[in-house]
Image 1: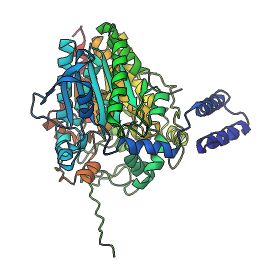
Image 2: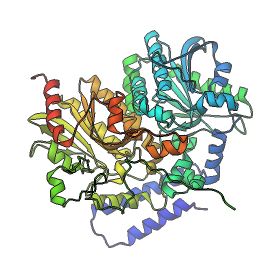
Image 3: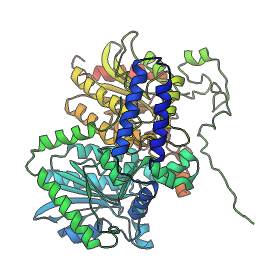
Image 4: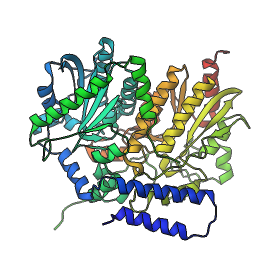
Length: 312
Length: 280
């Protein structure tokens, strides 16, 4: 059965075709564009609004494994590093060094927190600029010593507060990306839960960007989008269906390089299994990048991100 | 019985809701101007110095030497990769924005000269869907970086943007890393980026290329924030300082090099262009 989007497209196509030919080139361009969209739609994974919303719920599941759950299962000899060497240690972002698949790697990731006390301490995984400055410090350390960088992304977004603005939230997120664009070591990011907007992309300018099956990656939360575009925060499900933050769509749009499978029912059902699957994918990605020289890594990484976008 | 009281807290500098005030009436001091008066004064209130929004074409006409501007990538148009539909289809919003602004997108780019010094210009226009950054804005900025690098001239960017364009979903978020990579390529080629932040410069644009300027200046009273005052207030219930996230606060906290009224921007940029050119 054709979806709502397909029906709408077909209707627009029919309307366009029935018009007397006016501005030749421009109109045929529009026709072509619609037809291409229709083809893409037919080939697209048939993720319904319900399936997309299920991803949103699983990505935010309170039992979903967080960064430190994976660190515990995947890294040996983990040493956590604290502080941005400037003014604070932001617990919303975890950074450190450890042994992964027989080599030393640097690791970064947002950490949400399991109970109320830890959630408050970690600010629900919403970092201040200090968090991103800590991340930059760890990235630069990795670069200096030739350690590959792994980044696990799981945040509703960067923290929207008065002090965060005063300390330069926008600039910190921009510079964190700029540092990642400069690194001469292999970098792999994986969206493991919520990939919320700028706060997520600050740790995701990597050679390989992976995404767990039930993670979401989006420009705004479904609630925020609904509040702005529908002026109704309860339209979140509708909003999510419209901007499609699920892994299948992110892969289709070329935003992520691969999807990391999760155990049946989601990562929270079997954290050990989820960690094994994540470890396998991270290991494979690092192996592919191992032999690429630093200048080539930088060039390919930037070329990859500079090619993203759809326009005519 | 409902005991809930809705209190809407507005920032005192926030612009009034659309339609309540004539666009030529100053929101700060209520002075009213004819179109030609505003234009003659670069859309700055002659009485109190409030900076009205300034359109991209007008900015270019003011900043660039007469006849020096050659537009590039003018034909780029947004697609609708998500087939996005909120209250109205995205394609309809785009068409409407093009008709009402006379622009193909929220950014105009091209080569120019300022006081005979060559540069590349990238100027945003808030009137086109809130200056939001989608694939086309990202691509134009990206190409402007390349052209600047090839010509060996600095890139001057004037920003006015509400952030990423939600209608393009995750692709609009990807314009952050895309423009960051473009600026990094420009920097590696020895090129410079100067940024003039107009009102507002927020969210995705602030969190990407705009913050990577070698020199960054703000217009007086411009909102420069990753998250705007209303959302901060609603999310955190914190008390906001009077000049929260305005240019003035950003200067005080070290995020800007200067605050420049419109009249002074051209000569300031010309000075920078001289300083960054080999010939001196």
